Every structure is written in C-alpha cells, then in structure tokens.
Image (cartoon, rainbow, N blue to C red; front, side, top):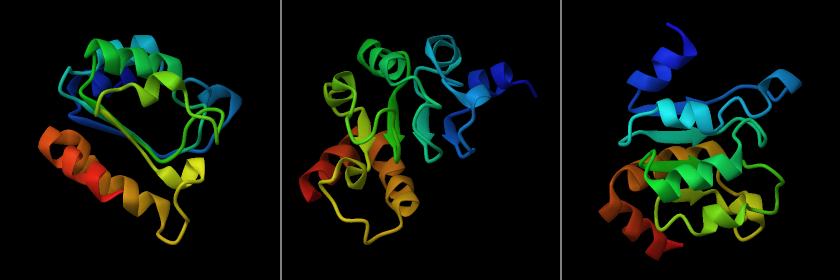
Length: 129
C-alpha cells in the first residue's frame, strides 16, 4: 500500500525510522490532513521527521485526535503549539529535561498512547506526572 493509503486507513500511525534528509518532515500538513480525525500519531523515531508546527495546527484544528511524542523537532525546546494542544498531545518529558531517563523512553510513549487515545485516560495520566 502507498503511504497515502496507509495514512487514510490507519487508526494509529507509529513512526520508527532513522532520520535522514529524505525523512525530514516526512509527516507534515498534507500527510496529517490525509489521516482520520480519530487517528493518533506516535513518533518514537527522531525529531524532524514530523513537522511540529503542522502537527500543532492539526491538533488545534481537530484534523487528528491525538499525538504521543518521544522525540520532537528542536529538542529540548518544544513547539509552543504542542504545549497548547489541550490534552491531545503527550510528550515524553525526559526529552525536555523534566523526567529522568530511568525508563526506556519508548515504553513510556506506548503506555501513553492509550492515555492519549481516550480523553478520560489522558487526564488521569496528566495527574500522575
């Protein structure tokens, strides 16, 4: 299947690939618009593969339901729009220096996907941090 078809059909898109010039902004506004409004995006790859500005806009506009990020563009600085995602974006806080790396980061992100996918679960996860 093509990337476009996968984006249109997937409930959850999980990115796990190395960064390269060809992978830079592999997921941007056009790709996010192809996703279901109920879909979640999980990035456990590298920062820069997702255009964080486009992701922040997509979350704000309800283009996709949620995102879970183990990595992001410009670490350790987080795009301000992702901070304002109103409970629809979960970030591995170890990436921004608020949590130690005592747990494998990928495990935390996968656990958080459930929280992001269900708004009531996300609120509970926020209270634990």
